[in-house]
Image (tube, rainbow, N blue to C red; front, side, top):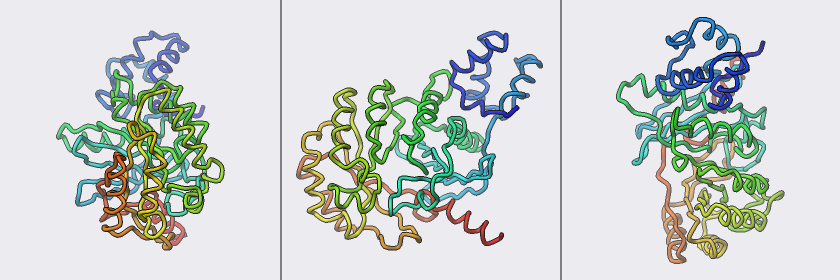
Length: 356
């Protein structure tokens, strides 16, 4: 029998499973408490469960499908983890210390097929989707690390912005969100969770109907089709006009604010004219949109790109503000380690090939 990660089960899934096993429904509450409140690492530690129940759990489930390979800690407190999956593929997870709490950025796919020309995540094409259990396990591994420090810190915020396109793994991501948001477990508030997409229009519309109160971010990175298509292949399939229609539909249905992520690339998308185009693009959405200007973390394999000069970023920001656009220049994290998403994994894979 192939075991699956118990972290991939929602509370309702677990109730159903125990009923199917001829056991009591309250067993799910006991197991959930051991997993997410007491945070045990083995079923044997679930001391209020009968031995046959523990044996049944061990027969069907595994606790964590992740093996820690590398941990990098930045001077600013950012921690980047490289995890190996059960099939030997590798993924990255990042813990960031923010003023408002501890935020974890999770990965949703092994590799990425979106094809952004500036991104380290896409250096390896998509091998497979992660299961919900593998995504939840990233949060648990970080929380284990925090527990070992014995200072009472806990993961308070989650961003789904790591390697991969979350909406290309939609069902597993939705299950993951339901697991970590459940108030009987990790109880990470929906408004403390952000999911980022590069612009899969049908899934943005589906997400609007989902009912989850989590935040949505869109990786825009350009104010017009010409520039966006040149740096983001997905724009050929879903050009900006279609994307903005989906944004309008999302806002109309949810009345929730959308964040637009905008990586500043020197000489590509960072001129004042681009800023004005962006302001015009968002003109009718200003009340419920927010622009996050992001300094570019250079990637060796994409040496045609470099980060924008500080004065260009400030000039861009100034144009947006004068046009009434809510925006911020994002604080940098982990610049003294492999900061770009996917960079640590890429280096590790090169090492493995060299040794081979």
